[in-house]
Amino acid sequence: VYAGGEILDIRTQREGELNALRDDIYKITTILGQQKAALEADKRLLADFLGDVAHQLKTPIAAILLQTELWEDKAVPACEKDQCACNVAQAAERMSWLVEQLLKLCRLDAAVVRFEQKPNDALDLLRSAAQSVRPLCAGRGVTVEWTGQQVSCLCDRAWTLEALTNLAKNAAEHTKRGGKVTLGCEGNPLYTEMTVENVGPPISQEEFPHLFQRFWRGKNAAPGSVGIGLALAKAIAQGQGG
Image (cartoon, rainbow, N blue to C red; front, side, top):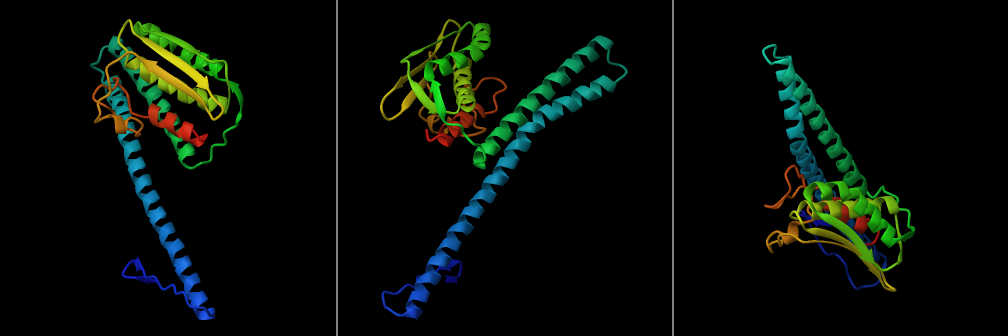
């Protein structure tokens, strides 16, 4: 029974219908209290999430509005207006990507994603992820390779590839020219382990606990990073029991 916002323990070890009823009432109020706490936590999480989304969308929207004003200014030369159009397209593309990633996170948070657990060649997954980031690596003067055992793993190919690609992209962005990103895998009777390694600056002990926290950016974060990729990779892994 609630008293001053707290649940009073009215259980008793005595026998009888009245005492059994007391125990049932206590169990029900306990469950209702837990559900109330969970709903309040979800409400706070939703409010924080919406605030983060609004903050992340603010920058590309402001860029689009600014470029639109320049475009409408008759004093701006035609050549500069062409650049305005390019800038608007880039901002809109970035906003589209951001919304797409946020929708993926929302689906994972709401547990509405149905992962198709099918046998997949782990090395083939690593190869596909490596090829996805090869243009980025080439532009940064970084090599990327994959190695490991020929093992089969039960996972959703598309979602797992998304997670691996995000990890590889993050590794490439934190590798200096001439460095290397390596994707590896090995298996045992209990699980298949996939790893992404790079040669780059070490992660400080202060930053390590926040790496997979959404919208968090470390002091060495890549320009334009919004802190979604690692959070998405973690959600995908946990959604498949990883």
